[in-house]
Length: 180
Image (cartoon, rainbow, N blue to C red; front, side):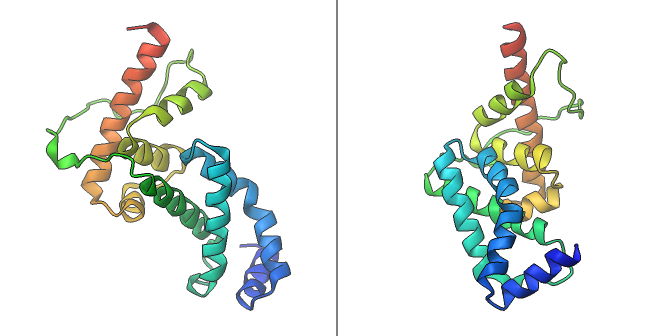
């Protein structure tokens, strides 16, 4: 962590509102992009971002000095988005009710004809339980242990949802690209 960021966090912990505003300014664009990945409506994303910053500033005493502040804030942002999605009571079905499918293909390579926008839109169309794991893994770079902690699910469920989400994603992209 840079000396400037360390200083701002330290001052923010002391209640310095100017330092908090500077932290907000340094991170707001990145946090908004993350919120938009999870919430389709930009106003909802802005609300979630504000809630996440408020939670962060109210809980700065829980931030461990010397650790990655941006990563800590990102986790709060993602959890806030997930909480907002849960409040909407989006349907989630227990993964335990489905037979296990094993995929031999473990790569994330997409056809060169598929645009990034198409991939992101298709991810957004996945069922929520798959969408969250795919986004956390593919877009945010979290591993299964981290995903399990964030979503409060077993690691095996994270792996299964990722595998199934990837399978559904590839099928939907194939249909969008080739019509079959």
